[in-house]
Length: 380
Ligand code: GDP
Ligand code: MN
Image (cartoon, rainbow, N blue to C red; front, side):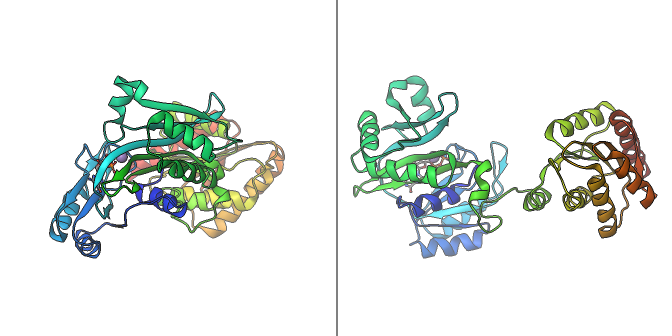
């Protein structure tokens, strides 16, 4: 997951990297107050998860609080490479003498990290890298050794970075390791006219597989912008919202993807991908169903489970439990096969809910769910 600049800079600051004072808001009025608090002159910066904000007009210097309010008003709502600006950060401006580039990135094929550094940082770094690759230094980092002061000194010297940046190189590596990041980037890292080294911009990509190691209040390590995806993630479900009308729940990513194909093959569109995983309990199934049924676009739900470690009767119990917790108005088509399928089918048959029907094959289930969704869409 990519972080916003203001989140990245908090991680930098927590590890002792100097960043300018700054505050985030979604309101132009509040921007004026923040600017006043920061001394009047501020840089107003769009918070979007993409680079090139400066070139797109999303980074502006404002001379006073009124100008900051105006800049915030103009930047909020702006589209930058397909990202709508919902918040701006106001930062104390820094007098820049020189801009550098610094990053660590995972090099999967080499099984290492790469330190990338250049004495020609700033908004033109891509052009520099393309036209004069020798101006951008790449040094492999052995993850077991890490970036010691000696390694950092080597990188700084090779790239022509000032001696004070050695400390930043070491601290940035600590950010990567402690936060379980796949990428940390500072562009530009600047030397101010007073000779201080400051991180003016930051990009961090966290390793989602390590999220469990970072228990933080919800939203901070911001799961997803989609409220249903966030709710599903909070329940430990693998759920991706799509834009169709047939809700899809299955066990195992491969089976769920095949089910999406089967739905599409029947001329309908899947509304989501939801994998309840292996060995799912009744609770997990009930949670899954409640998430999918909360999507108003869903006109029918297809539950496709091939029991292996997962027992079909537990899945059926979960469906029955969900029926007690929500008032079902959307038809469900359930296909249970494999481990304990007969018991699972019997549980559903005994419950005999008028909106729940069973299918014996995946294709048959997909056809039926697609037809029910189409019928519901045409009906209203
Ligand atoms: P990006 O375009 O998305 O990478 O956004 P940045 O945060 O890197 O800002 C773009 C450029 O604006 C930087 O490379 C700097 O040249 C400039 N900039 C940003 N903040 C300041 C500041 O406080 N002082 C000065 N002088 N320039 C700044
Ligand atoms: Mn930048």
